[in-house]
Image 1 (cartoon, helix red, strand yellow):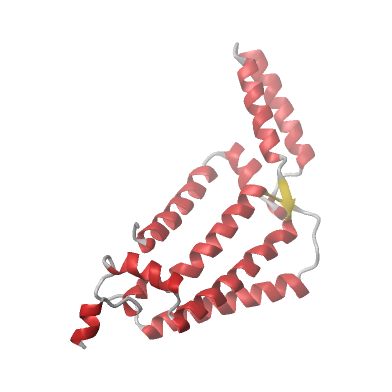
Image 2 (cartoon, one colour):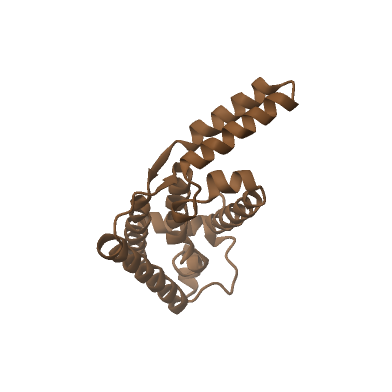
Length: 198
C-alpha cells in the first residue's frame, strides 16, 4: 500500500494547484470557482453565454462544437446544491476527528493498518505525541466551532454552490482528519523486533 502521508501531501498540493490554475481563467473563475455572495447570478451568466454563442457562431465555422461545449458546461453548472450544505463539511470534520481520536486511544485496526503503510517512510523526526494531540485538538475544536456556527448562528441563505465544491470540501475534511496525525505514525507502529529490543 502506498504511503498515506505522501498521498495526502499530493492531494493537498494538487488541489491547491488546480484552484490556482482555474482562477487564472476568468470564464472558469466566474462560472465555477465563485459561489455564494461572490457568484454571478444565473441570469447574468445566461446572458454572457448567449452573447458568447452569438459571437462564436459568427466568427468560427465550427460553431456547433462550441455550442455543444457551452451546452455541456451549462448543464454541469446547473448541478447546484444549497449553500447550507456547508454544514456537511463540519459534520464530517467532527466525526472524522472523533473516529481518529478513538482509533489513537484504542490503537484501533484502521490506525494500525495506515501506520504500517506509513511506518517505513516516516522520518525519524516525525511528530511527537504532544504535537499530534495539539494538532488533533485544534482540528477538532475548529470543526466543532464551525458546526455550532452553521447550525445555530448562521442564518439560512438561498445561495447555491456547485456540486464539485461540495465534493471537494468533503474530501478536504476527510483528508484533514488523517493528516493531523499521520506524521506521527511511527509512534503507533512497532515491529516485534523493536518491541523486543525495548
